[in-house]
Length: 457
Ligand SMILES: *Cc1c(COP(=O)(O)O)cnc(C)c1O
Image (cartoon, rainbow, N blue to C red; front, side, top):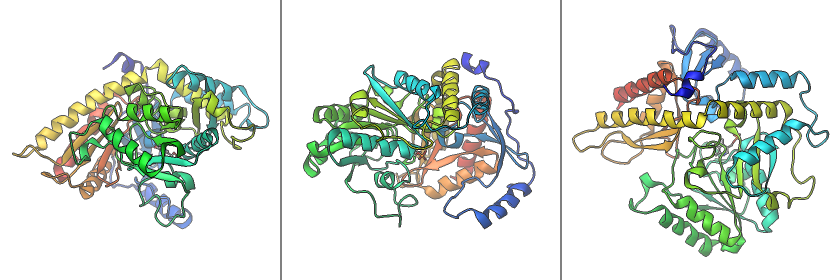
């Protein structure tokens, strides 16, 4: 137990419990109602309906309690009903739900901007704009970069995920399910090779060499002086929790700075203590020109933001940025409370503790599964803090094993553990627990995961 964990308290019992058939009758009934009214294009990976959630537990309408190793895709880092967030929302919503910051502004928006300018890397003069979704933040970061530079081209990477709107689909790498048949896509997006240590043809390639590979391609195929922005997830999320080799991000950042290219770090998934730092770029001391944020920012309420160099953000004419709901007052109150919880409970420290605990378990499992040649179905263990993943392969090769991945996630669910998958090849199991999860619950979840892999490998 760490000192920070001891301070945490929970409303729901922090214990896994599945009763009778799965999914239960009430969830089944809701699935039938849903099929008649909700579009088929919206898919849910878990077939149960939620009634309550707290700490590391999600409870469904049939009274089953699941260990939450997904946090609603890295959103509820402070828990799904953090008392400070709940109280702040209740207080805020009892005064006003909305006025529109572009009509009659309010303090909460300004206070969130102050916090983001303080917490994001770099001590330069910064400005912030608030939106609703991660995709909207990405769209606006690109708008700002294009206006400020007077250039069009945007560089994105293999395995990238940036959202589901038209421009962010163009920036996203994976066709199915995100892009297939949804074109035509926004122009002037160029895709470059990511540094993906586990799958490099030359496993010896350094981060600096992988960056050089990108820079040469940009200079030959686009021209450095044509590029408005490079957008990159410092640790890729949906693409497979890919951590680039050390030195890759700093080398790209140095080149971008030299060429007047805006470096946009998409920290929508990796931000807000998730990796054991406020932002994943901090691990390598990289200071982006603009940073996009969402997911973990507001304890589950819809809020997103861009924070960046004042000279870039202030280049935009008045009225050029905004949106009806952007920086909703209730969401701002939630963000201020969530940031308070992150600081009060040292959730960066908690994320590093989760890494230590989980990676230890995963390494043990990997060696337990290893055959005489040392290989196993766990091809790679990677990530930082509480953003961890294992890549499942056919033992003895690096051939992706999406079937095993799906079977393992399904088996965990039946045992009461919510586990998310991801990856270009659909073969990555990702761990994104709420940072407030207890050690006991996390270890129980990891043991269920280990049994599921052993049973199916
Ligand atoms: C989730 C995500 C987005 C999109 O956020 P939405 O809120 O779903 O629009 C963008 N970038 C990254 C890195 C993400 O993980």
